[in-house]
Amino acid sequence: MPLKKTQIFSTSSNARKTCAFLAIALLSCINPLNAAETELLDVEKDELTFGFIKLTDMAPLAIAYEKGYFEDEGLFVTLEPQANWKVLLDGVITGELDGAHMLAGQPLAATIGYGTQAHIVTPFSMDLNGNGITVSNAVWAEMKKHVPHDDADKPIHPISASALKPVVESYADDGKPFNMGMVFPVSTHNYELRYWLAAGNIHPGYYSPTDVSGQIDAEVLLSVTPPPQMPSTMEAGTILGYCVGEPWNQQAVAKGIGVPVITDYQIWKNNPEKVFGLTKEFTEENPNTTLALTKALIRAAKWLDENDNANRNEAVEILSRSEYVGADESVIGASMTGTFEFEPGDKRDIPDFNVFYRYYATYPYYSDAIWYLTQMRRWGQISEHKSDEWYADVAKSVYLPDTYLTAAKLLVDEGFVDESDFPWDTDGYRAPTSEFIDAITYDGRQPNQYLDSLVIGLKQSSPSLSN
Image (cartoon, rainbow, N blue to C red; front, side):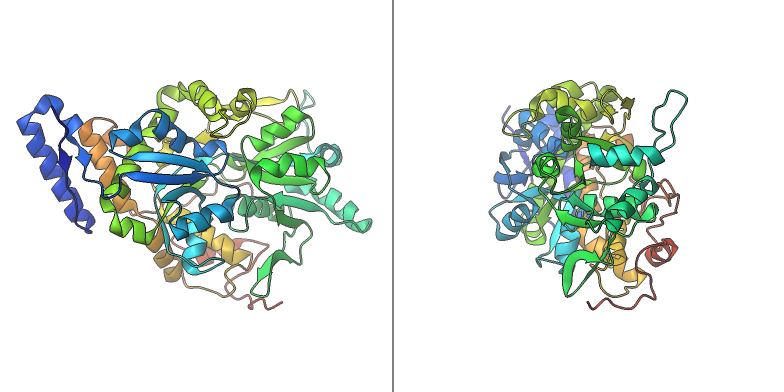
């Protein structure tokens, strides 16, 4: 039978849900055996171009494309790799790209006007974890002297940045800077690297309105390097280490030029990573298209994690293709299939290094957004104290859980996902957690109390940085 279209035009999430559910029920009564195939939304725009950076956590986009999930929703998508995160963000803002795989900090920073000003939103969190911190072989040789070892003479993990501190101090004594790379000023990688350093009593530096280097009072100098260039930049000696997503930590091991010392899973267990970003204007003008693409991405995330990661080897083959990540299958598979190699030969089980669907990974939690905002404040990107209410308001202006749950409900009714896969009753906040490397508790409802509990960084009472 020909496909029928469910029309959902209301900007009210409750109205959208009601209309969708009534249409589904009606169609099921007419032809219950073919109900699932009739749930094609009347999308406002069916030809779309999405951007991404060559990292394994762009996987939901590749899988939604390769498995036909976009087409199932009546969407004809082109995926285009971007040179760096700024080019990608600019493409979404100008409309050259309809949406993109984004750093979680990008929609938040753009919306509050840090860097480029634009109202960017997200209905979908792309993954948990997936990053690591790598240092050069020479730095690791010195660090290793300060790392506890087990009876088999293997380093005990997680490795604290306190083991790096004597190395940094020796560089300072010799009058040499200690340079490390991260991928963008508002990237997860920047904040994770800073968090790890600060937890080891190494100051990573502040930003100010007049100095956006992020190196005020810094003991380690952090600068931007595009992800695929990290290994070669370290090999050239320009940086001594970096924080990046996969496969560029495992690439350092494969090339024999560096050692990953910690994963972000070990810095903050099951931390939020990338999001799918769109302009607020796009979602308002194309509400059904936004629902449709969210449905496709949810299905892709489920495929990536289902049956205990049974599909990961196929995902690795897809991602290794030049149009996606373009790295060797062995390098991508080193982390994507549940293990992670530190020193050559020291391969350890980290089954949750990449999570795409488990633990409600795809739900856009307000508390995730607020953590990123606290780190912007901690390091001076937000130069003045803000109230707890301000943090909550910004999070709610950027993260779109109602859109996500509307898409999820449609998928449940179509039989593609299980109702238990989604946090229907959440208020948008995860439970407080202390599963950080420094065991400090984070509660998204109390961002200023959290900031005050961190030893290094700006507090509620800190004066504004002006130099």
